Length: 221
Image 1 (cartoon, rainbow, N blue to C red):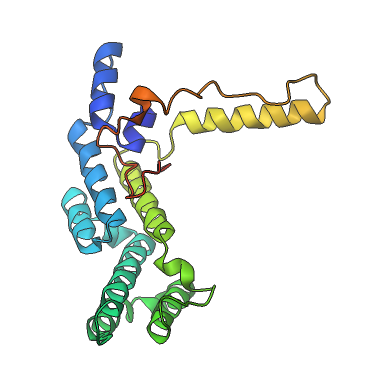
Image 2: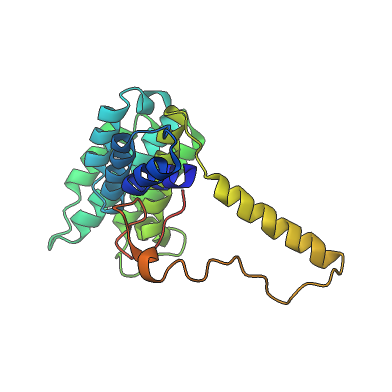
């Protein structure tokens, strides 16, 4: 159940709760709200994501400075991406945003300052030929990382587990297998998890879940 809640499958969670005759700790609406916030971040619409976060939990970003800065920095990245696509490479909007939203926050934390400086170097290069140290800023993984941080923060605020127990069980199983092999126990060469059929047939149903990132790839919270 906690997997469906943390991973963002509202209708599946509702159906599971009904069939198991249990009361879900989170309502379907709160799950769907997290789904929509994550989808906005995956799409690069950070302003919408911030507005939705503030509607859902008005105090979260005030309390979590690191999360707020990560969102604003990602918003700056998206502005730079948009500006670089224009014929005249006019970065005025991005620069003004950095000055008004990030310049005052960055000096309060060495990591914030380093992140801002690295992000601003995007203005100096052709985005088709970026140095290896800053190229990841324009990769989808940055959106995924920030979206995961937001999801975990919202789950904590709602009193939910940030990671489903299922992942703990998988890690425990992997640890047990490793220890058994180190002790030279007689084990098959490959021990499957018995999940081979999950992504076939009905396993592909998305349920409007939080895994949609534009690449058809599952996201793990």
